[in-house]
Image (cartoon, rainbow, N blue to C red; front, side, top):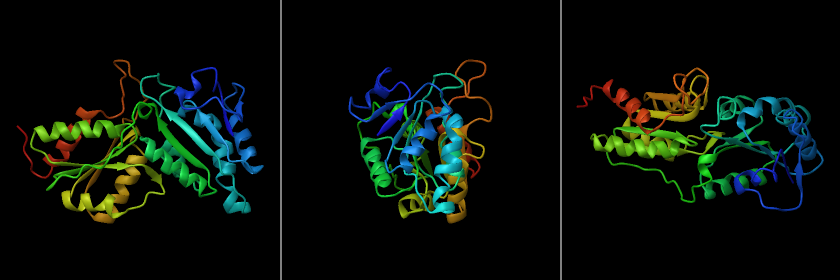
Length: 282
């Protein structure tokens, strides 16, 4: 069962939804959809709730945060809803937010940000194997990507970059820029934001490079990048910096431009960290 606004009227969600039964076109109220979807979950369905722009998660947040996510703790009931929360770059200051950090904060949610078909299948299997509400933080940059995005581990790496969502593409570009300046760089992909599990795949590259950078397209302050950077530092004892949107409105127009970290900015942040260790760049 899939619910959302303008599913069939506007491109079938970038052609990611087939013309199939059990599609419920919701009214353009923006504040009622989540309540309907949560009600369907309580009635025994496993609804997919499409939020076309993550900024609208604020309007839909109350039924998700204060009801679906709290039911298990308070009443031993479940509301297994799969929220397709879609982010974008360049659709204006109120249509291109990345708000997965908000739902990491509240207990009861599982939060993931898949960027490949295989990762999306993994997240979907996780949803079907559990009865928790899921926030699937999708980014439109993933829709044109059909390839796997493996970690890139360099022998004797100088720094490890942990990348989330759309910044994963930019982190790989940044690694190539850094390589041209003699900097060896690991790139480790972060798919699961909550629970965030410190496996050897995550920690070993940092233990080798001894310095890290976590990059996220959302806001840096109190966001996913700071949360994960803190977890990595506490676990390994090595310095890890967070990099995301600056603490002001996201906008692409000058002079107010505030974009998700791109390759050049990621590379510069990495060099600043390395400069603090005495590394000199010419």
